[in-house]
Length: 364
Image (cartoon, rainbow, N blue to C red; front, side, top):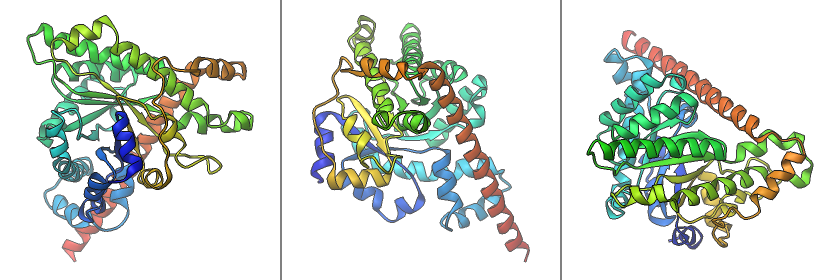
């Protein structure tokens, strides 16, 4: 067992892998990460699947079979993704069972083209979770204004939700409120309050967006300050009377998850965000390259302070430099949706291309 990743686990933070490919499964690499690097879950997104399915030939035979069944490109994708994710979910199932359902999760995203469609997001989330037939599979819904309503209803419907594309304290609070309302409605309706959820705050994209607009001494500090402020809101919520009332009924906290924690700046340490965001009762989902770097030379210090430390002072400094945090958070969320939509369209185009190749092969 790797000592560096184990220290994070003992601190109370869980490491999830931000990657999923068929090669990762069939090679046994994911199983090794679980056994050796304290990896207790994973996340996926359209960009990850675009790369996984679009490169190499591991999916080609399955695509050919699905084309023969007359499936659309979108249906083919979800068949492929669910096959990978259910296999991964089964690998994590012992962790899920041992933690009484707290850990051992995998995540599948609804189509990013539904980001502004509340009704179809709710419908698709329920359908995908039912098709997976695994208790440890989150459905990812973006925390857009339309997504917030879908999150509340999906939680009420008993669908475990990973809220994605959150970029600020305000985004997180909106997602947390949606989760709480969903649980409160379940309690009022006499339903089991145990519906798991995580809220995923994207960190490094703040620093990428502002790098060209700030002095070098301010580089790679904004995302961490945003995360620290959000961590304070998270801990404040867990200490609130409202939450204690829900916890007394058996409800589980919606855990805070750090996303986008791979270092994008080649001048910065490759473990920058992982080390800075070591925090009890959180999850960090990290790219494979960052996981291996942290296992090799990462350092674990004290947990983030529950009061946010100097986050507010740092954010005030950025404000004096002209950074409008609220406007930038909204911009980053829009860009995140657009980037996933672009990857989705690229993924559909690649599946269509491979489908056409399969059809030509059959008719040859």
